[in-house]
Each structure stands twice: as C-alpha cells, then as structure tokens.
Amino acid sequence: MTPLSVFSIDLLSEHLLLITSVLVFVALLMTKVGTKIGVPTLLVFLVLGMMVGQDGLGLKFEKYNYAELLGHFAVAIILLRGGLETSEEEIRPIRKQGLLLSTIGLLLMVLLTGGFIYFLFPKAQATTAAVLGSLLVAAIMSSTDATVVFSMLRSKRLHLRENLAPLLELESSSNDPTAYVLTVVLVAIIKEIHTLEAAAAGSVIGPVLLISMVVLVLQIVVGYVCGYAFGHLGKWIVNKVKLPNPALTSIMILCLAFFGNGISEMLGGNGLITIYLAGIIISNRTKLTYTDRRDVMNFFDGLSWLVQLLMFLVLGILARPSLFPQVLLPSILIGLFMMFVSRPLSVFITLLPFRKMSWRAKAFVSWIGMKGAGPILFALCPIVEGLDIGQEIFSIVFIVTMLSLVLQGMTMAPVARLLKLSYDKEPEVQTFGIEMPEDMGMLRDHVISEDDLAAGGTVRDLHLPHGIRIVMVRRDGRFLVPHGSMPLQAGDHLILVMGDSDD
Image (cartoon, rainbow, N blue to C red):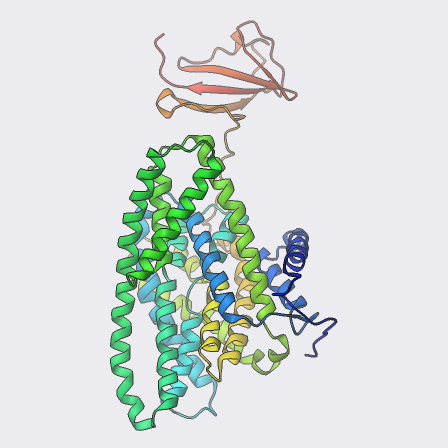
C-alpha cells in the first residue's frame, strides 16, 4: 500500500488543538453515516485515524508511551461509567461466571490460539522464542474489550435475557488484568531470552512464570479489595457532602475513582477493577435524587464518548496500513480461528458447571468476544519495550480487531434475535421531570385513547381505581392541572401516581 502523504505534520505540534477539533468534528459527522449502514461507531473512529495517519494523509504521531497513557485514562473513565450504570442485583447472580471467564476462560483461549499461531507458521524454528512469541500474540488478543462491549450494548439498546448484559460487562471489565500480566511477562521473558544463551534461557522461564502467577493473583485480589473500600468511601462522601451542582458531584466521583485507581496500582493491584467495582457501589448505595443521578450519568456519558473517540482516533493514526499486506492472510486466519474455535471452546468448557445456563446463552457469549482498544493498547507494549517483532504484532492485532468489529460488532443484535435472547423493553415512563419519593408510590404515564372516552369525556368519567390519581395532564405541549369536570381529548398524556389510598 502506497502512502498518500498529502502533508506531513506532527500531531503534537502547535496546531494540536486545531487538528484535534477538526478530527473530532469529522468523526462525529461520520458516525451518522456509520449508524445508517450498521457499522460500529468505534470502527469508524479507527478508520478515520488510519486515513489521516502517516500512511494516509500524512499526520504523524509516534509517541507510543503517550498513546498508552491516553488509553489507560480513557478505559478507566469508560469502566467507571459502566460501573455507575450496573445494578448490584443484576451482577450478583452471574459473578462466578464472569470471573471464571475472565481468568480460566482467557487462559484456555491463550493456549488454544497460541498453538494455532505456532503451527500457522511452519517455517518458524521450533525454538522457545517462537513458542513464546505465539503465546504473546494470543495473550494480547485474548481479552474481550470493555470499551466495545459497553458501547455496543448501549448504542444498539440491546436488551438480553438470562442476565447476559451484566455477564458480558463483568467479563470484559475484569479480564484485562489477566491479559495484561500475561503480555508483560511474556515480553519480559522474550527480552531475557534474546540476551541469554539458549541453554540458560530455559532456566529463566520457570521462575518468571511462577512470579507472574503471583502477580496476577495479587492484581485481582488487591483490585477487588481497593474497589470495595473506595466504593464505600465514595458512597459515604457523596452522601455526606451535598454539593450544589450535579456536575460538581460528577467531578467528585471521578476524583474518588482515580484516587482508588492510583492507590490500588501502588499496592500492586489492578486499578481498572478498582474503578469498576467502586462505580457499582457508589451508584447503587448513594442517596442521589432521580434528577441528580440522571445528570451525573449524562456527564459521564458525554465524557466517555469523548475519550473513546480520541483513543480510537489516536490508535488509528498509529497504525501503518502499508505494513498490513504482509500479515493480512495470517491475521484473518487467526481472527476467524478465535471467533469460531478458541473462543467458543474456552467459553463452553469454562461454563460447563453452570448447567442452568442455556446453550443459546453460552453460544451468544462465545460470539461476543469482541476486540477493541484493549488489545491494540496491549500491542503497544512490545513496541515500547523494543522487541523486533513489535510492529508486526501491532499490525496483526489491528487487523484482527477490525475484523472482529465488522463481523461480531455488526451481527450482535441479529445473533441475539436468532438465538431468541433479545426482547423489546417497555417504553420508559414519561414523567416530564416530575419526581416523588419511592415510598409514596410509582409514577406512570398513560395516553388517552378513543376507548377511554367511550364512557364520557371528563376526568371523572375515567372511574380510576382506588390508589390511582392524575397528577398532571399534558396537551399540545402545555401542562394542565386536572379536576373532575375537566374535558379530556384523545392523545392527552396523563401522569398517574399509583400508591396506597385511605378511601
């Protein structure tokens, strides 16, 4: 592939703000087209980054360490937002399944995929480095990406049976530590082998693998402990400190989450697990009003879209499409093997003890092993550490990620319908901003039809049951206070309160 190179300019120049604003604006416009043809929004961001990158229009950005920092920041915000939207009641029944998939299931997938990659290159020498290199590529691509899962589930408004949505969210948010530790350890071993004699290299692998298992367990345990601790600390602070503006409350929650992330990583834990768990606890146990909670979620919704847009743009700019042809066929074969062989096998084996979970649910979990920013960020590690095969690995992972976004991302909803696992959610209650404490009753809305007016045209003629009262009537954009003799019209929206009655 011949680079276009219309211009040559560094992204990190005095024009950073101008370039970034133009790219973000164009990306937002492109999402309209992507949505109409069913292309995942995040794939649009990646493609745009490739188009303007060094092999495209000529925008240069080679600060891989900066990209890693941006990626960690973005994923942390996305996981916090996911935690704030997660219900404890929904996640409790599938906690074991999610944790097993993110550990045992991921390890099985690495072994299966690594073996396929090794035998895919018959000309490679049967050396320890070749085996570890194959496992490294598999480890980098093994995790289900939380960024894509959260984005796809919410953008498609997909409602799933058998608690599948929280299961996928829990797995994708908790499998990064396993993939990350495996990646870092394998990179360290490969670097060590390159500096040692072949005979001495074998004596290094055993101790390093043992240490890596200890580090993995420590990351998960400390991450959960810190998440629980900072979640309850955040709950207490949010309940005690009544800030005058929901935006300030949102910023305070963000600070508390990042504080927990930093402390967790200082203690050897995984900060992303800490942030996700803290978000769940803060969301489910704080005493925020409906309006404040809605404003907080709107804040994090906008912030998460901004950071994932920037992250995918930067990762697209880092890609070198001119290097793709030499690894295109192996990358496609690896991607298809993961989708149709290693992921399904690892999922069905891991979930074998859970017999109440239907085969359809397991099949859907097998299919939703989508790749995204996580694997691409992990693929930066070999480059940053100076491995000779770093750029080749990055190209393979990038191609597999794009293949996953196209095949799995575009078919998520159809596969759910085919397996009869999706359903239409009841429309949300239109209360027009009116709130009331839960112990006083429930608010519901009702649209007046011709049948409602058959017995008469007034409020009194509706003969509402005991415990149901009309709070407000909306007609043609106007709000009217109801009374018994008030005439009603077809199409009027009634806000009803349903609670206990003393008559």
